[in-house]
Image (cartoon, rainbow, N blue to C red; front, top):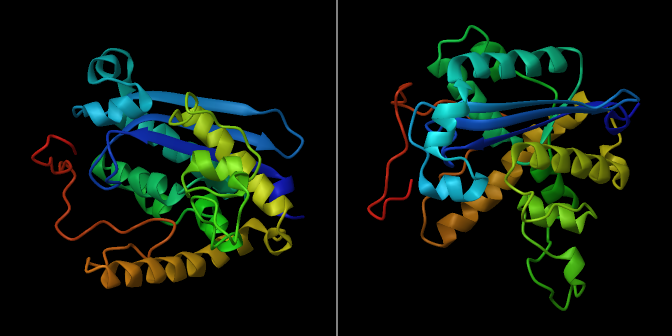
Length: 263
């Protein structure tokens, strides 16, 4: 049976920033869907223990004060999230998300930060379905704007979830985007659509997971070469689905703040 007709665990974080090793989780959602079973949604609002920058609040709407007042303890929540995902993946349910490597890398860093015993298991979690990796493989030359080669604007767009979902016929409004629950559900629908329309993806979740390891490396090599041509350093991570902790990392590190105050 192809994986997309079975049960899926749609997963997403909203965070304090874009550094998966040093930023923190603010909200999380795991939505279990498909397989002829009822949908089950689990959500968390977490006190990250550090200040939530204004730029992050502008994205997901959670302020530091709101998280401190209403959020649960980070260590306990991260443990619950990790154990929940491990139970599902251990039963063969694929963990699905858009650029889910970011979320899983952050989850592992948070597990190490809070000295959770499940960190090693999280580092090996499988099967994983990353709709960004698969979308790049299925539609590698998609322009952001219409061109002579592709004139239909409905089939053009960035690799961001909101644009990718639209290209594949899934509605995710600006108001819904950047909420963990809405993004997780949209990623699940996107995963189903990608597989439903691509014979090469109608295989087992374990086989898709293995395929993505190579695809991600190829995509990273290509983007890294592009950066070098632009005179920029090739700092693109090749690991998938989880990036290793960087040299010199410590649990208490937070992202550097630029002179303009942004993270």
